[in-house]
Length: 163
View (cartoon, rainbow, N blue to C red):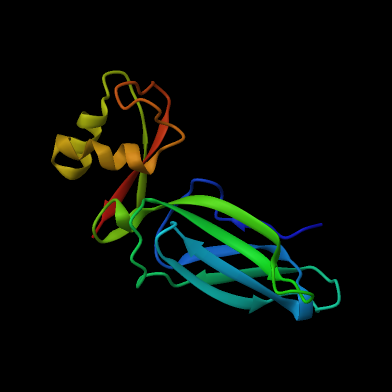
């Protein structure tokens, strides 16, 4: 078994801190984490397992608030540093959507199930009071929305909410 990230799931809408959980093992029971967008990153390490091949569960709260991320999409990585040469091995990468880049004061999201007559502009007006903020919903749902002009009855969309 290699390292696994069980939380967050791919394309989850996350805030700060990002909760990272899973199962892993590393040299001397140490694994590293990294959250980045290709422009800035935050890193850290944690202990898991017994250090001699045992796997253990882990959950950490990765504080990333001071990062100068430029993109909505971040990458959460967990990896081991090789005892042989320091290279990154057994790396697992999960893409996520960073809510604070979409909505100021991000605190979480609502689930909106699309009904007949809905448009992204209508959903934005109902949630933000401004139909022009529909791009927030598109940005928070890159897997569900490939064309912002085509949403479908029954789709469950995340609507990011700020303070």
